[in-house]
Image 1: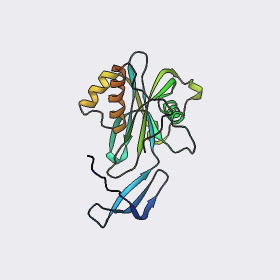
Image 2: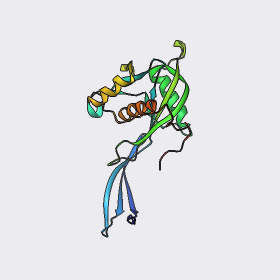
Image 3: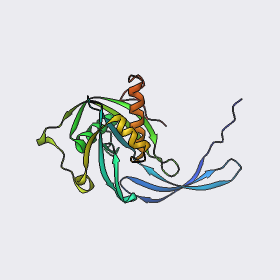
Image 4: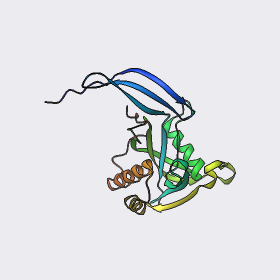
Length: 201
């Protein structure tokens, strides 16, 4: 016999701050014991990330400065879902080209994650990109701000997984993407989803 889940309903919403990438709100939410409680959280536009895997079994990692944590982190090529109407796989291909100067002949879904559901509704879709090729030099993206400082390297997938387990890679989408890629490879790629698979709701 399954337990009946309480239905959490929002009885009021106050917008505290709004910007291009996220909005901070306070919801008044009904609680199981009766009454309501306020819940502050960040409404986020969402993001895509890309595990780019070459024919030698190496993945593309990017080292980028992240101001909230005050240091450089190893990450995947990634970016925001901030172009209205843009297909998510197309967004992933755009970020791969802009940050790693690469195109992909095939793109599949690896994993979806709620990056920090305790305070944000952000969803990140991580794609697997294969059949990689270089973007011609004259067509490469002009990187600015933190992107001008990007370090791009290729690391064997198993070595990258070792970096995750050693605590050297901590970016959530990078951790999830690398572990999912290693598992998918070991399963003969049978667990991949189509690039247009629906996002979790």
